[in-house]
Amino acid sequence: MTKIIKSRIIIFIVSILISYLLSDNYQNMLGFVLILSIGIIHGANDLLIIKKYSKKDTLRGTMSYFLYYLSFVLLGFIFFYLFPSVALLTFVLVSIYHFGEQHWEANKLSNQINPVKRFFLFIFHGSLFFIIIFINNIEIVNTVLISFNITPLIFSYLKIVLYALAFLYILNLFYFRETRKHLFAEILFFSLLFLLTINSTLIFGFAIYFIFFHSLLSIKDQVKFIYNNNKPENIKKYILSAMPYFILAIVFLILFYLLTDLGTTDILPIIFTFLAAITFPHVLVIEKMYRNMK
Image 1 (cartoon, rainbow, N blue to C red):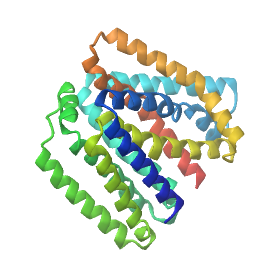
Image 2 (image 1 turned 30 degrees about the vertical axis):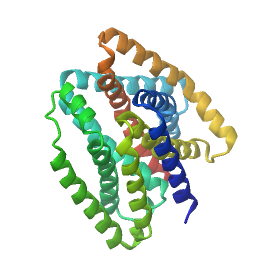
Image 3 (image 1 turned 180 degrees about the horizontal axis):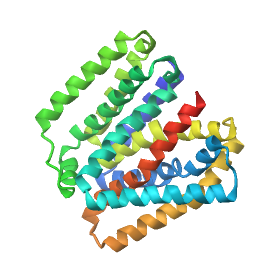
C-alpha cells in the first residue's frame, strides 16, 4: 500500500469521526473556515503563475495581468447576476474538469496518456465526486438549486447516474494499461468519500475533498512551478505572496454579503457564487500551468 493511499485513508477516517462528533452547525463552521482560508489561498497566486509562464516580470505587466484577472472575476459575478441557473451549471461543469485534472496530475499520470483518455479521466473523476456529494446531501443541494431557479434533482435518477458513472469509470481504468494500477486506489477513494458524505453536511464533505484532495495538492504543484522546487522556504514565500490577494478576496466577500442584504439562510448561494467567480479564471491559469510543466 503506497503512502498516498495510506494518507487518504487517514484523512477520511479522521474526517468521518469528526462528522460523527460534531453537530451540523460546527461541521459547517469548520468547512467554511477551511474553504475560506486554504481554499482561497490556493487560488491567490495565479498572477505569479501567469508571470512565470509569460516570462514578463515588469510592474506594467503585473498591473495588466491583475486588471485582466479582476475583469474576469467581475464578469463571473455579472454572469451569475444575469443568468444564475446557467452560471451555476457552468461552474459545476468547469469544476468537474478542474478537480479531475488536479487529481490525475497529482498521480503523475497525465503525461503518459493521450489527450482524449486524459479528458475522460478528468471528467469521470470530477463527475463522480459531485454525484456522490449531491446524492448524500440531496435536500440541501435542491435548496441551493431552487434558489438559482433550477429544477430540483430526483434521487432515483441520481442513483442511476451514479451506478452508470461508476461502472464506466471502472471499465475505463481497467481497460487502459496506464490506469489499471490505479483501479484499487480509485475504488477505495470514492468508497471512503461516500462513507464520509453519508453523515457529513454538504459544506463539510465538500471542504474535505476541496482542501485535502485538491487545494493542498494544487499548492504543491504551484510552488514547484513558480520556484522550481517544494522547499519549506518556498512554501513560506508562496503563502506570504498570497496574503494581499487573500485579504482582498475576504474583504470583497464580506462586502458582497453585506450589500446583498440577505439572511443567513442564503449564505450557500453567496458562497457558491463567490467561489465560481474566482474559479473561472483560476481554472484557465492552472490548465496553462500544467501545459507548461510538461
